[in-house]
Image 1 (cartoon, rainbow, N blue to C red):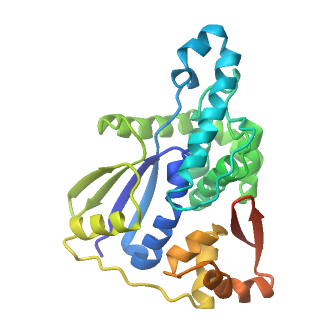
Image 2: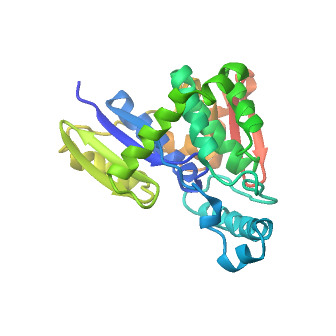
Length: 287
């Protein structure tokens, strides 16, 4: 069976990728195992001082970051309009004079991918959730270890892997792939099928993703909608133990919030999942 591979060049801190989660849930449910999605860590913020106002930096590094964080929060909040995934940034503490890069998040993903590859997808999602939805300071190592534990990765094993040369080398290889393709903006996507490759840049919604799938496969891969039965919803939670209401709507082509809640009600009532209400949205988590 020929599979379409999509390499997604991203960073765990990226609101644009977090907002794209519903589009990829739809891709999963409509194409199944005919499509493989592989995140490529790309280091969005190598040095936060490259993003601050130079005049603020002339005052002090502390002042520059203090002024930058509200601007970054405003960017995040504006990105909620992409799909509606909840973002309500207040008191953002992602960077400081001691935490000047998003590289730790990238390295953490590669560490989990190396030692427990079947947990990598859940870890990346949970890390985005912690960074953007919960507004936690995930550039701190103890926060990264906490997220690893949440997805079933032993903290000691995670910390050991985080500090190994092998993990650093794996991250360097991801960075090399980004540089090889001369990607100066994120996210970006490399579609590969039967020896062909198509590079796309910027946010791709579900329509754009489906059009690219049709283009590169010459229509060989056709979407097959998945009915929102209790069993199919349960299977989605097996792969994605934490998921937003909007992702469920996209995954099963449901019309509105109430329809999603109706489909999830049996799992809620028998205690298989729990509801998490946040400032601007609803998540569900497998129990």
